[in-house]
Image: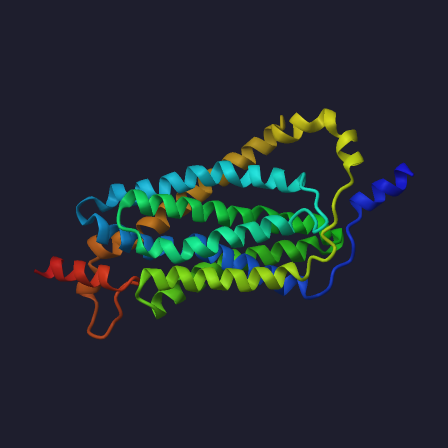
Length: 284
């Protein structure tokens, strides 16, 4: 009996081919709303709200959201591991993330202060983490071991394609509210398609947790030196990448003078009015 239960836990069921494109779509839309607005929409909003203190304002908005994201991502992942419903472990969290992101994507574009923008952007990151951790966890849940390399490659493709998608949306529309709503709508469509491929999102039996109860804190706080080295590397890499992306808009605007120096007909940096208005101020 114990051997049967162990096999049921460690051997994920075979999934359909639709899982892989759905994983790419779900991950790309999720990362697009995390990385896309940071490239120009949020800097442009901060510039419009507090043009004289935009550098600090952007640091406040992205810094608070980043700290909350560092805490909530592993916490949500752990909670989803221990979630036991008839719908599975991951699907309730994916639905909850969509339910949080959709209304915020409608509200955040109308923020009138830095603190208001920081609040909505932080809550949006919480919703994104409710998608990120369970989505990644479906790979060991439902993908056979011999196919997990391909599933991981799907996540890598999504991380590379997401900034392109986010920037493309911001290039097509000039209003921040429209950018967030389009990205939020894409997330809902992609996640619903992804959920339909998770029919085998099985629930781990309660007996499994009882047998692992003594190892609970070892899972929560790993003692492996290699784990913490990898964790530190990921944090530092993500911090450097996001700092560069967040301030790229202001660098093009205030250091390169992109809007003023570019040849006639060249489009201004994504975000619309903020860059153009600043270019006019610089020329004046």
